Amino acid sequence: MAKETKVPAKPLVKVAKYEILKPERWVGGERDGENCTWPELARMLWDVQYIESRIGNLFVSEKYAEFSLMRTDSVAEFSTRKASAINRQIRQDLIADGNFSEEQLNRFSKAGALPSDVLDPFLQSVVRPTVSGKNWKDISSSNSSIPNYKKNVPVCIRCDKDYHKKIFVDDDGDHKLDLGITVGSKCRIILRTGRLDDSQKDILDKLVNPDSGWSQQTFQISYNERRNKWFLSVTYRYPPQDKKLDPDVIVGAELGFGCPIVAVANNDTHASIGPREFAPIMEQIRRLQAQTIARRNQMLRGGEDSYVKDTSRGGHGRKRRFKPVDRLQQKIDNAYKTLNHQMSRKLVDFAVEQQAGSIQMEDLSGIKDTLTGTFLGQRWRYYELQEFIKYKAKEVGIEVRLINPDYTSRRCYSCGFIHEEFTREYREENKPREGGIRLFDCPVCDAEEVDPDYNAASNLTLKDIERKIKAQCRTQGLQVKS
Ligand SMILES: [Zn+2]
Image 1 (tube, rainbow, N blue to C red):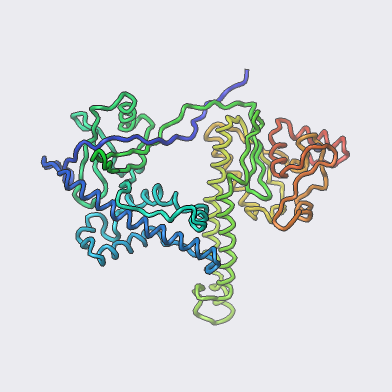
Image 2 (cartoon, rainbow, N blue to C red):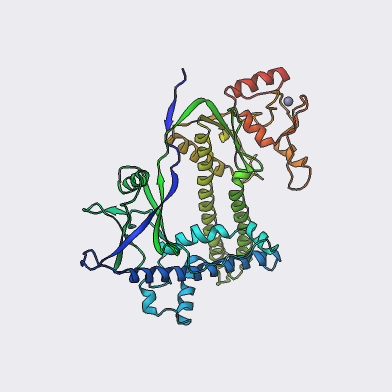
């Protein structure tokens, strides 16, 4: 009987919606006993909705201007302003338009139009999903129009950090929440719980219990015009049922040529992840590489961004000239580190999803310089990626086995034949076209041509791959290192 390990899988996210029963004023830590009136609360929420819609429209128009300019090649790189810059801009606009006085805006934020705990989740969950290259294609071909935020957008508030205000139960058993929208005096709301069914009550109980493992992530307050009522939606995370790992399921992970990781599971479905799942990360790497080259050239030319004003040659001047390049390198390394965290997380999540007891990947410690031209470019970045995979796998009880990389990417998964010529250089020199991929075609069996990284990852799913390769090498008379 195989041993099974339990793993905590990724927490899941859901939304629960509750009616706001009434507001209650609460000032500076001490209740003054006087109710905040509905008109006051509604006024504040409407103000936030109006400001959010202005910010949303500005953000969207800038983003689509960027797509439009990039399409017509007017600019190579156009970056949309940061949320904080837009926040400050809207503050000035609102004052200039006479919509708000400085004093009125100061209730929400001293520097911008809204506090960042309100603005960030609004941009993140409401605006950003509408802004993508794909949407822009639909818009430019007139299949849809640029989104336009009207007054009735949800008021978003972050509540995922310890210091954020969360729903709590007071001594009378009422469920309450202090709205973290205004600076200084706060507005407390009471949720209607009298008519909740058991499952809704159960969710609330878990959300206010710090030991439940359930956690409040974001609030969205919205107005239902027909019913003339305000509602609070809570996005929350909850722990999933423990998933069992199957020691017979192995995920083979190839550090790919065309994609940083291609992984396959040896279960019935042969589930895999690869270029499709890693596309956003590959895009980030490409952009990072392009920026690096551009910035480095600019610096070495001593362009405006280079801070070397002192043009004295040799000695000191020379040394100082390379300092900004070092700083750039530091930034690049940090960016790659983040990407390595994202990639290792994706792989380990995939392995958990497949309930794999182990991950097998190539042991790269013996490899010298065959990594040029691959996604991460340098060996130590692969090494870092592998280290991240190891410790993230360990956290969930998955074993990582490092495999002798000899021939793992040259063995035909279908018949076991080793296609000796099929090296990285061979693949590079025999590409069907620039940017294309040389597929793995087995010279002896009639298996269909297959993506070489997928073929290699499939080989890595075999329990006794090293022994199989050794045996095959003897049959074909090939050298194999021990
Ligand atoms: Zn074959």
